[in-house]
Amino acid sequence: MRIRIVDAFADRPFTGNPAGVLLLDTPAFPDDPWLQNVAREVNQAETAFAHRLAPGGPADWALRWFTPATEVDMCGHATLATAHVLHTTGTATGTVRFLARCGILTATAHEDGSITLDFPVAPLTRTQPPAGLAEALNATPLEVQDTGEHIGDLLVELTDEATVRDLAPDLMALARHSERGVIVTARAEDPRRGYDFVSRGFFPNVGIDEDPVTGSAHTALAPYWSERLGRSELVGLQASARSGLVRTALHGERVLLTGHAVTVIDGELLSSP
Image (tube, rainbow, N blue to C red):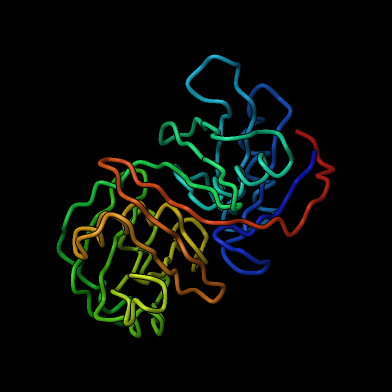
């Protein structure tokens, strides 16, 4: 089977967020231990596995995502990477519908090479900062939001962009405060640089100390900043070492996430299920 590494939310190699992509030629997923072993071997934030579904149903492909440690309910960048592989190999055109644990997701390819994901908005609930969160972050939260069951993060606004960029959290302590991890964010210091807000994502509970660019986090970041900035269309910069831009557009209970992707490795998986 062909296996690829794709940099998602990136327009050039070695930026954005790398994901493994494996298009299966089987009518169902292999056993979970095999999927987890492949994800552990690929050793990226997520590896996506997809197989075709029968025609005429609500979706075209079934899709699952595994970190090196566990399966997750939702992953934006690996969905973008999968759609990129489907389109660049001629396996699919136009809009692709995926059936995932979090529901039906779509990915639409555009002439400029970008891809738009249609995801459910994360249901934000304002909450009090848990005891010890400020100490784990080494920063004072301005506001904390719970992102709901499919994301499982705390969304934490910090004072400014510099604080987000310079953050050096205690990851072991941070793991005690959420199901998946913690997203930190702040307004952009200067929107003329091409982005409206910054973020970083730390997910030690699923084996990812810091995620380079997190599509699923933007299902929470988009409604959060759209309400505060008074605009439905925004650009977010995830300020990791690799960095990446995510264009967001809020449409009721759905959010559109747009970015580019680049295939950097294309090889053969020699271990079959």
